[in-house]
Length: 67
Image 1 (cartoon, rainbow, N blue to C red):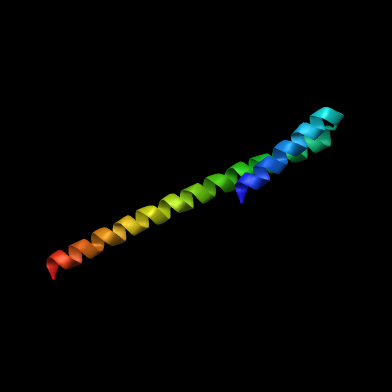
Image 2 (cartoon, rainbow, N blue to C red; image 1 turned 90 degrees about the vertical axis):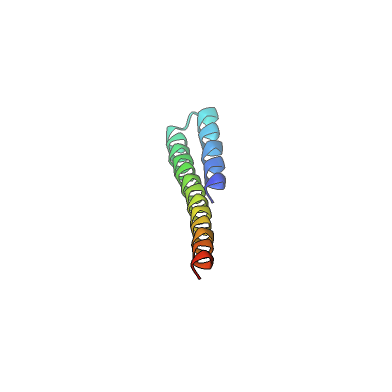
């Protein structure tokens, strides 16, 4: 899940900052970015499912009205 990846990345960034470890900061930045994108994907999938359910409901209404 993206939220966890994002949090882990932010933690690595913070530790990298505290220890002056550029490699760890870069790793944390990449992991946080991955988490952001995964979270966005999850949100978009949920929105798409909601739209699909709404379209199905409208289709059932239409079929009931026609038949």
